[in-house]
Length: 398
Image (cartoon, rainbow, N blue to C red; front, side):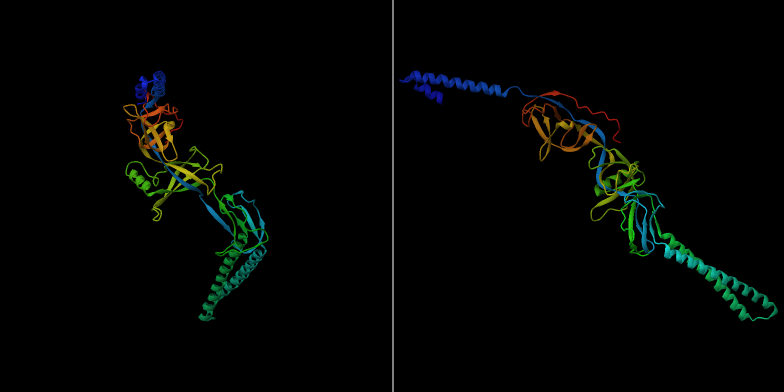
């Protein structure tokens, strides 16, 4: 309208000025149109490919904790003053090693006393046996009454019983003396001493003094909880020829919090007989070799258990666009328009990202050209066919 107005004013006294202004405005419009045409430019080129459709192993992952196969509390079995401690806190000990020594003198005296009592009982038994034998001989000549014979027989039986009682008392005294040497019941790593030398310890009761603890380290257990849904899926798979972890030691892998590779392999050795009614989970257990004693009871880890083969779509991990709220993949439509599809990601398999949902096998995903800022949702692009390749692996995921 401005150009038309200027043209209409061209016939008055300002004609020459209006004509010059008209030419200037026309030139500006031409330059703006030329700049707009140059700004649009050609559509950006991208490399596209269909996702790889593969049958891959499904790995179920669980967080759990390492536990010792055996954990023993070492307590005093007799009371007394603690005289010696024969280990360094945290060292490895063998089964039978003497860890603590309690004052043996009272128990040695008890052994000597029990041995003397046994000697007295044995001597008395010899006399009673001879008296009873003589009484039996005298019955033939009718020089002794039956009552006297019975009394001597009873005395002999009592004497023999006293011998047995004295022998038991001696064994008990010797056992108490033996228990003054507190030995390691299992081989493993010992904790710190809970009582120092010179202290009195209480033994032989429910509140016996705790001296230390010992745990085994090789092998070591890993305890985890599986969901009810996973348990049902495993139970369904048991209906097929594949055996469950109850009947067959299925292989598993584990990694620690600072590890990225599944380098530690073990086997399942236990699945509980019922689900926890409160949590809706079932307890599982795996066992791992730990010859370097690196794995420690109480350490958290992540376990991977084979859950069967599944069909999956694989794409390069670089094709996934991430923001704070979602993961998207750019797809090129039939009319070469870019569409952003929200996806759910799975693990990495053979160098490619597993897409659990959000993509179709027929989709043409952008695998090259994502660095161009013009390649965004809604843009028109020039697609070129590319190829997605799996990375070779030295060891099978199985």
